Amino acid sequence: MKKCKTWLMTAVMAFAVMIASAVPAFAEDDKSLLDEIKERGVLVVGTSPDFPPSEFIDPSKTGQDQYVGSDMELARYIAEKLGVELQIEASSFDTVLANISTGQIDLAITGLAYTPARAESMEMSIGYNVDEESESSGHGILIRAEDAETYTSFEALDGAKIAAQTGSLQEMFTKDQLPNCEIQSISSIDDGVALLKNGTVDGVASAWTTGNQYVTNNPELAMMEQKFDNTEEYAGTRVGAPKGETELIEAVNDILEEVNELGLYEQWSDEAIELNNSLTSVDSSGGFFSTCVQIVQEYWGLLLQGLLITLGLAAVTVLFGTLIGSVVAFLYLLKNPITHFICTAYVEVLRGTPLLLQLWLFITVFSTLTGGEMPMLVSVIIALIINSSAYVAEIIRSGLQSVDKGQTEAAKSLGMSNKNTMLKIIMPQAVKNILPALGNEFISMVKETSLASTFFIGELMTVNSVIKSAIYKSIEPLVIVGIIYFIVTFTLSKFVKYIERRMSVSD
Image (cartoon, rainbow, N blue to C red; front, side):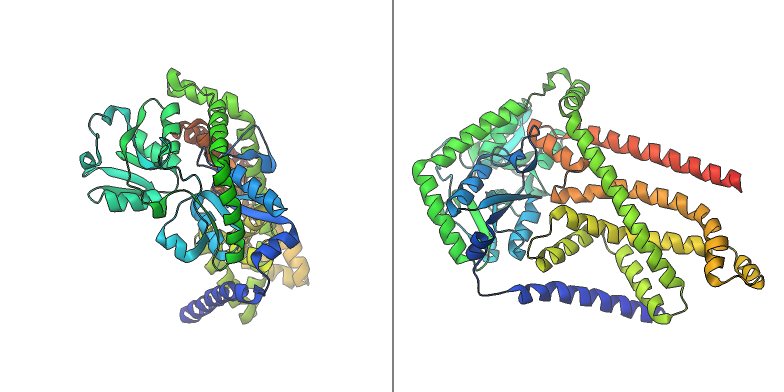
């Protein structure tokens, strides 16, 4: 039996992978991506809005207008020149790179630097923001101000631990030019700064402009004077397009040549720095507690919005997960070996694989099937529902099976049908076991939705990223969001225990 189940689950996973990999092949046609963009009238640009002043979020705005920065101005300029509307898809940096490789976005404009590995996986434009003589250009190491006299040159960093964003140009520079350093991989500069402040790492590899923005807003930090050697090959920032879309990248190159000639990007960069500094109104001189209070006062609306989205996601997920899970549970209990094995495979595969992996898989498949038309939020919700349904199916199955078999036998002896036995005898007793467990599943989903922050859909952890990028503080927003999570889950857990007590009294 175990071998049969294992074989079936392996077959299901293999089939899913085959479908996911095969779908793009069926979606191909002779039309270029540039023609498709002009036909649909929308240019979809992926970005990671946690890299000020190039791309960040203005909390005072909503929708597409909230994405600001020099790169976002460039994206709007490119869309205008192509004669189409702009649609910005926000996600983490590595998600942007993955989405451009799978064709889920048209262009990646996210502080993208040239590397040989990236050039193999995507089309890359000519460079913009290429003035290497400018004091604000290049890449360097962000350190603690107290270490400035110690780390006066790269040679002094021998043996130091340097944080660098995974897959970034700074990571490549660190590996090549600081071979005696230990590299700590991070997903964002915010994470690296947090590690730097608490002493976990000795430095953070950063673009010079971004690093100086952190220094401006964190007096305890400083930039090393020495910069990484940056050859002409790696100079400037690039726009990425799906591999093979040479017509689109040539059109982008024509626009970038105009941007470079007119000096537009430098103008956008100066405006972005000014805007970002105006948003950073939190004064940290009063200490940790004072900073947290200011953050709550300044961003309470954003935090409340994130909390409501988190609770809404959890509620919708558990509600529809319960409907699907109920069907799976009842099919599982049927005396049909085929449905039994299918439901077993469904539950075991979903419970046996990470939720983040499922989010990636479902979002990729849905986006490919719909030609990128399905909104990211809808894809995330569907993935969460499907994941939750597997756990709910187990809750309902175990709840139904917990009712003594003698109840069923007694009902049948009285001449009751199977339907009436289930509805009037089994279900009322099983509900007392199922409801508290569903409450716990809701509490779990409140926390699990944090994984959706990878795709910037607005829940609490996304709000945490927005605030970190706006105020250049990492620990304080995390603590505030953590307290909110704790208050919500603690309250819900007490409510679930109250329901359990009430039900036990009714017995």
